[in-house]
Image (cartoon, rainbow, N blue to C red; front, side, top):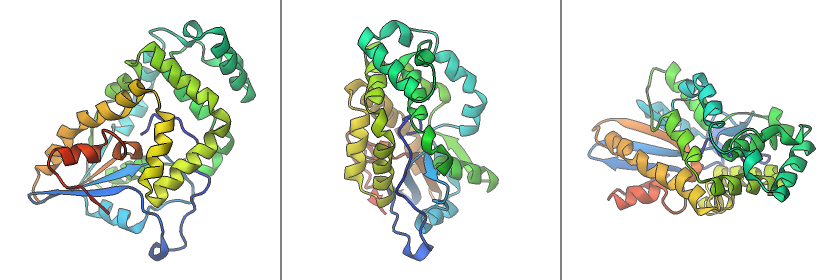
Length: 285
């Protein structure tokens, strides 16, 4: 999921050749009356030498005439100022944290070379996103674009039909609509785990690369331990995307590729679970 500020992969290297590529990221095929919809679990940051993707994923992309992403990435970049605006119009970190929480946040922020109050004038959800990215700074130069950005750029260049499952406003609202309590819990969870952030994301991306959905679910459950956060960022959004998937499944003869954060394909309320509940039979590839 694009908004989760986890750390960066340390253990995934590009394979020597397509033939011996061991990577099997979460990829499902759903078929319905002549329509084929592939659903790929994405990660939003990859090592610079991890592209291209495994050959079977590249083959699916090549066959697809429609590629769907969580949001329109170009539009999101153009409207980035709205993210800042939405992050400063309600209760701010400086007003919500108690003395102990404020001390922990400021101490951690200073350890990364910034003034302690750097995030005091934004809402906790945005502070959490920003702080999470700060924890990645030490390894940032080793990493490049993720699966979604890589495929998004290619889809436009290749003239494929590109669609978005939600708007930027929808995605911002998933965070902004959280209660103050949940936002603070999300932020302070990141602060508490800052020292282990890179190792945690290494585990996440290793699980993604190997296709180990049990490990992937476990890591994400730790990140989204607060029930309201899990419900808002994963379950509710998954449900809102189902009409778009149903629409793609209603296009006989069309091959579509849906690219979403890997966290949306595992655990309670996942897209895979919702597709099964709707009577489909997602096939893991």
